[in-house]
Image (cartoon, rainbow, N blue to C red; front, side, top):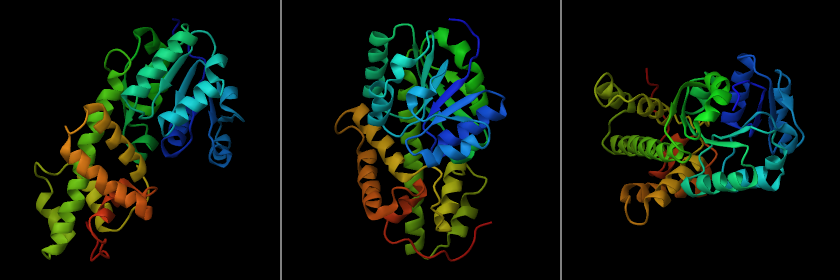
Length: 297
C-alpha cells in the first residue's frame, strides 16, 4: 500500500471527534466531517473542514469513525453505503470503543466486501482535554501496510501511537485501560462519600494524597470536579458505563465482580439523568451529592 496522504474523513463530531478535526486542520491536513446532527458539524466548517451532507459523501483515503456505539458504526458504515464508496486501498480507522465482538465482526465484513480496504482498530485513551490538545494515546492494531497511510492523521491527534498486533488487540487494551480508569473514578467517588460521613473536607483528602503514590492524575482531576460539583462533560458517564459493560461482556460472566457492582451504580446515576454529564457524576450515585464546602487549591 502506498504511503501517500490524500485526506481524512471523520465521521462523528462529538466531544472527541470535533477536537480531532481541529487538530487535523492545525496539522494542515484536509478534512471532511460528517455527524448525525448537522448543527454539531457546522461549526467545523467555519474553521476549515468540509462538512458533508451524508457519510457516503465524506469518504477519503483515511476514514475515521468516532461514533458512540457499535450499532451506530454499523449503520453508518455498512447501511449508509460508506464501504462501497471507499476508494481503493483506503484505510478505515475505527477509533471509538465498540467492544471485541463488534470489532471482529466489522473487520470480517469489510474483508468480505472490500478486500482492497484495510481495517485498523485504533481506540483512543483520553478525554476532552487530551483530545483538544492533540495528546490522545492511540491503541492501534491492524495490518502493517496501513501504518504509512494513517501515520500523519494519528500524529496530528495523538501524543503516541502504540501498535499492538492484529485488529482487535487495540480494543482489548482499551477495555482493560478503561476498566482501570473506571475503578479509580468510582474509588474517588466513594472515598469522598466516606470523607463526608466522617467530617473530612475534600481539600483535606486532596492534601493528604498530594505528591504520594496515590496521587494519580486522573483521580486528582476527578476528585476536584466531584468536590466542586462540576459535572461538565469531558467523558460522559453514559459512555463510560457502556465501556464498563463491554469489558464485563468480554471477560465472561461472574468474573469481574467489582466492575459488575460498579455498572449497577453507574446505571442508577444514568437512569437518574446524569448520563450526559461527566464521569465524575459517578459521585451522584453514592448518596446525594453535598454542596461544595470549599474550593480546592
